[in-house]
Length: 294
Image (cartoon, rainbow, N blue to C red; front, top):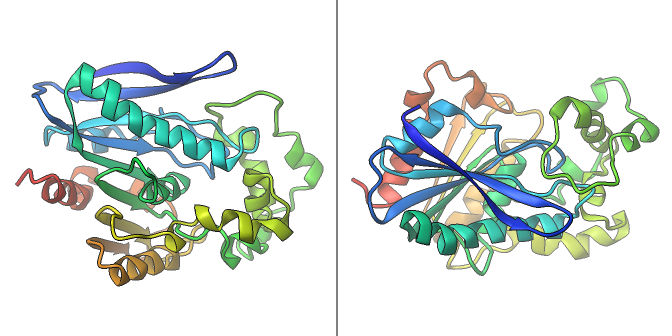
């Protein structure tokens, strides 16, 4: 890739340090627009290093900086604290990043995939929110039957016992985790419909009251940022209705929004794009229009 890459700690204490990777165009200019990338992994696994270099380059080619962040992972860290990490990352970009790299604090987009897409959509409800949101197969409702009841799709897989799942949980605060080691934990939550309880720490009887504020679709206001939703029509992990419903809810609030449905696309359909720069062009066009780069 043609870029300059810098790694920073954007938040730390005695127990953990959260890092981000800042990719800058070779010919950086003052007042750089920024895309903040949030990785997926059901909030349970993943890393800031889980990026697509072709997508990064496509964004850098437009004179936009790209930042990929780590955040604390569940269930060792609960959902509410994970959300604070995302807020703090946006704040770092606006404050420290603006000082270091002349980032334009009025042109910041948050891009996420899957659980990262959920966090991106939720960022539209923050007090310190971004100026645009891009969600790949994300979800606006974490309390729907698709997540709170056993999944017919995942119950086709061999059952993961509670004991097997618990072995994946550590006593440490995790800021990144490998997919293979944590997959049994996620699979168990989908087979039992217990994901919301696991990541939030609330009992099933409490989650509908306690987690409604953390459902983007239930908390859209007139200041919600322009949003681009992308989803595969055959997604068996996150139903395509999650993006369709979010699209309708945004339209009802007169929020500028677009949706792209990849026909026959599965979860993570973008990994199968044969020519990512061309396919990813839809996202680039949205960014250029939103950031007034055209």
